[in-house]
Image 1 (cartoon, rainbow, N blue to C red):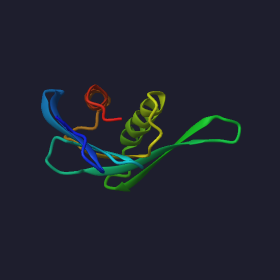
Image 2 (image 1 turned 180 degrees about the horizontal axis):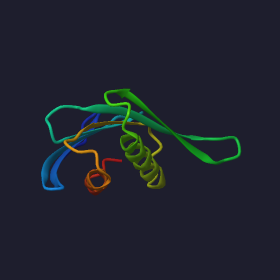
Image 3 (image 1 turned 90 degrees about the vertical axis):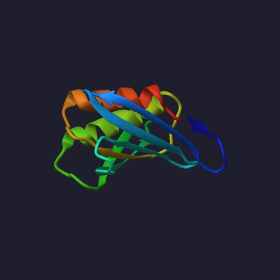
Amino acid sequence: MASNSFPVITKQAAGNVEGIPTDLIMYGYDNQIMIVVTQIRKFGTILHARQDVAYDGTTTYSVNTLMGKRDEPLLESCTRRLVEVMGTQGCKRPLILTLGLKSHTPTTLKGVMDLIVENKIW
């Protein structure tokens, strides 16, 4: 379900990732995208990612863990990959991603990515 009222576009979805019910809420602000993914009814780890263009035209990505688990490189990799996918699809806005997951395995994170891209808001 999507709402196109000013100033924020919102979308909610639900799915199963590795057999675990997963809720997805997305907010599309003019200057940023926020995506909440939870299997535990909490935000979990909160990450921020953006893409920058260097002087030579190459695209670089930066990811920061704002709150939560800082010792989970897979969460940062997932966030970086998501902002990269957004960029290839024309969205240059920074991303705030919250991941409240029961498991941080590569398979779980791929399932989360698939759920987000299937229901994209950008």
